[in-house]
Length: 281
DNA sequence: CGCCAGGGTCTCG
DNA sequence: CGAGACCATGGC
Image (cartoon, rainbow, N blue to C red; front, side, top):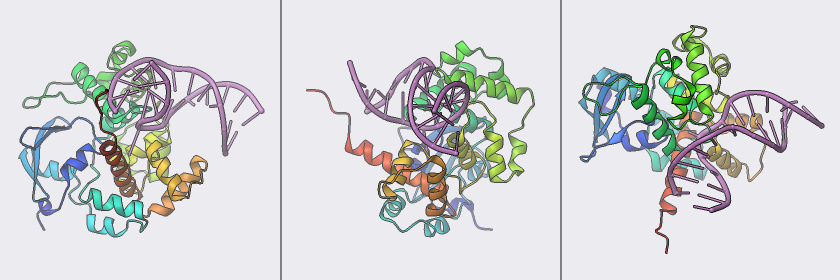
């Protein structure tokens, strides 16, 4: 068996692409974060992942070093936008996130920019999470803990109207009416429907959870960015949500979720490079 | 300062 | 089924 750490990765692209929100870069270029309750420090050397702290097997699995990036790249559509995103994001990987953590953070993501999803997630950790030895930030609180929170303390974390959804979902899971872990064996369409029974989980958030926590690499979350991109691919022709989902699935191929993530990150990177925050004169 | 953000849900036609 | 209103908050 070959060493999983021989697989290529673009660590910064992976951690900055809006799939996970609590990692932070250190002065030496390494990254610190948590996988569940395990403190981790990793860096990138020669496009390979280097473990500085944490269990290598857990890290290899979380960073999905087994995903066949060559095969995925070969399956990318041939249109200019997809190919440009592929070139720009070479080595970006879709993580295998813990089910609850991913579900909770994307419940809070609706109508929020990536930067604010991050700040809400860190506030929730600071307010409700367990301190972890060797980590600057606490672990994400379990649904059992959040189920005992009040809506107003969640609103204090900046959640706004999303507080009610997160609280309701935490309580529903704490009552044992649904087990996120046992949903893994469901087929994708069934799993999507199961996730959408949770308050605050519609089709877009469900697709994020499918892609980022359940290894459904063909799931395509359609947010405002991807919506605009699909529109451009269709020559400006809009459509219903169902039509665009069908189009994306057919057009983006068997690894449509990967293509989507590269398109999303590339589009956001271009925007940030093009409009830097200029001082007012 | 105004627009918009990795939307969901409910209502009404 | 599909379009519209409404929901809070903060980045840019």
